[in-house]
Structure formats: structure tokens, C-alpha cells
Length: 124
Image (cartoon, rainbow, N blue to C red; front, side):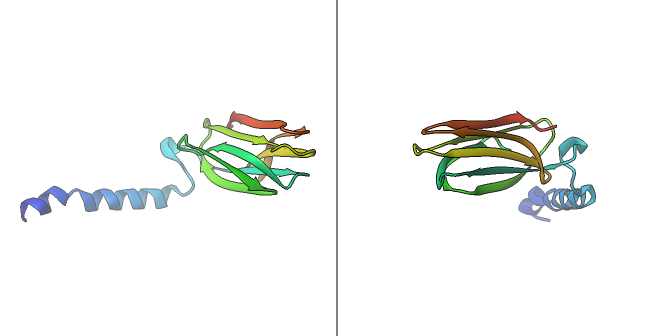
């Protein structure tokens, strides 16, 4: 085996262990904690709203979205979920909702020009 082959010889067993481990674990995250399906949802009487939310890796997505809007991601118990919704300035309501595995968890509604609704909490 040449030097390059020896340097990469660890790669195949590690990838196989990773693949087999994730298949054997099913829906389990790191340290054996069960993964949770987190849904961010925004609804309201207005046609669009400013939406800011935190992803599992800590990044934030911010954009103006047409309503109703939702996105789904995987997370783990103990992680922080955060959804900020702002009415862009027209009369009406906006509601932020967080669902865990498809079941309602948190919800807040605001009404009026430039109102803000924030859904925030640690995933149980």
C-alpha cells in the first residue's frame, strides 16, 4: 500500500461505522437523546410578515414570507427553539406557533401595525 492509501485507510471503516450506527439508532440523536421534529408556523390575517427563526446549528433565518408559512427541522431535547414574527405595518394579526412532532407546543398572537409575536422555549 502506498503512502496515500495508508493515510486514507481509516476513512472506509469510519464511514461504515457512521452509516451503520445511524441506521441502527433510528431516530436517536447524539448521546442517545431522541430527536424531535420541530415545526415553525406563521399564520395571520395579513398577507405577509417578517419571520426570524433559529436553526438547530444556531444560525438564524430572516426573511419576509407570504402567509401562511411553515418550515420543519429536526432538533433535540434541551435545544432552544425561537420564532420571531413581525407584522410589516398593516392592520391585522400574526400568530407564531411551534409544534413538536406535529403537536402544538407554543403559540403567541399579536394585533396591529408593526406588532411582534415571539415563540421561544427549550425543547422538552
